[in-house]
Image (cartoon, rainbow, N blue to C red; front, side, top):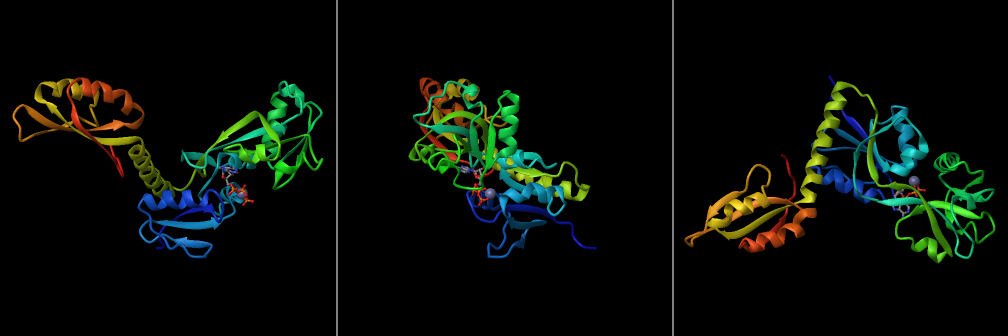
Amino acid sequence: MTETLLRIAIQKSGRLKEGSIKLLTESGISFGNGEQLKVRADNFPLEILFLRDDDIPQYIQDDVVDAGIVGENVLKEKQSDAVIQKRLGFARCRLSIAVPRQQAYRNITSLRNKKIATSYPVIVKNFLKKNKIDAEIHVISGSVEIAPSIGLADAVCDLVSSGRTLSSNGLREVETILNSEAVLIGKKRMTAKKQTILNKLLFRIESLQNAQSNKYILLNCPDTAIKKISGIIPGMKSPTILPLNRKGWSSLHSVVNENEFWEKIDQLKKFGAEGILVIPIEKMIS
Ligand code: ATP
Ligand code: ZN
């Protein structure tokens, strides 16, 4: 009997490629990274296909692949039946409308009867419809930001991260339509065997994401403060307490969420914590 493999598509070249490979690699999946279109992972039932990102939702719909990594913007634009399985937190950007810097702009109604250049006609059309704005959409596949300066459009709708490309083309961002990040997408329903493999992969990604938002913390404290400090940084189950070679003192180890870390540090110091070390965690399974 042939082994069941989950087929996942990632971007062949571009902004998502590196993050996608890093995610799989950090999930403990090793695979040759040659020039092939398709590779079989060495240590996980996964086949990885390198494709153009824009085509991935359609390939999922057509059963060519089971899952893929794309920007949310592409998922929304392509309207396939693929669904988000996991948000991945990289390749963050937004899809925004921008107009020439000198052009008057009050609010969305200023777009009425204007010509908007974009590579995202579906998303823009829905946005205009929702806001009851009649405007013309001009589809171009790349270098959208130069459209106004060459007289092709009055406004653009394009992906923005820092905003530098817009401003160097004399444009000003006026509306954000969508906030986007890389997402792992997949078929809504798949065979039980494939679903089991996908769940394994999702579990590994979750433990990476947990690890990234948490830190391992070690500190020394007087024994009398152990209870209070344990209340501030309870960790996964409870902190580990180890005696120091100094009477009345202990070393306390725990896990703390990065976002709460700076708030907690002052309290810890107040209760007498000293020699605080904060260490990254590679994987975290609760
Ligand atoms: P092509 O498919 O023609 O190679 P693309 O624009 O789809 O071009 P990339 O530029 O590699 O390919 O972008 C891939 C994804 O990266 C985008 O769909 C988006 O989700 C994300 N992204 C993050 N930041 C930006 C940005 N500043 N500009 C464009 N895309 C960005
Ligand atoms: Zn693309």
